[in-house]
Length: 105
Image 1 (spheres, rainbow, N blue to C red):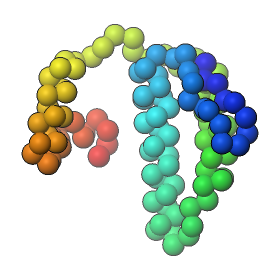
Image 2 (spheres, rainbow, N blue to C red; image 1 turned 45 degrees about the vertical axis):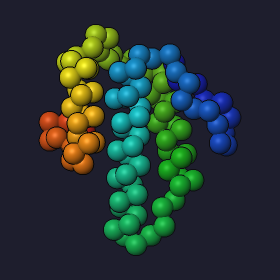
Image 3 (cartoon, rainbow, N blue to C red; image 1 turned 60 degrees about the vertical axis):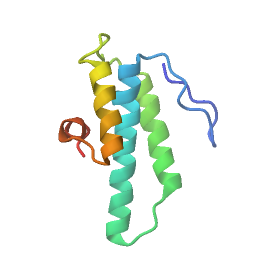
Image 4 (cartoon, one colour; image 1 turned 90 degrees about the vertical axis):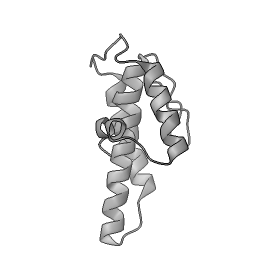
């Protein structure tokens, strides 16, 4: 369960779900929503309404927290190989397409 402590600036990422649930279920989707809404504000030439966004996110996170979605519990792929690929990409200054594709970049 994700816990929310308070209505203002609060600790809202303390969780008991597996890492795969946090990474794919919360962090990735939250960043996607943030960047999407920020992009819409920029295209419209409007200020980004951070307060309204945070209110929507708190409701969305509370709904996610009480959800019953299932996430993988076994690792997938070779983490050592992926770490090496990422390390090498930072040295070369470019990110391989097979790393960015799953993230939608």
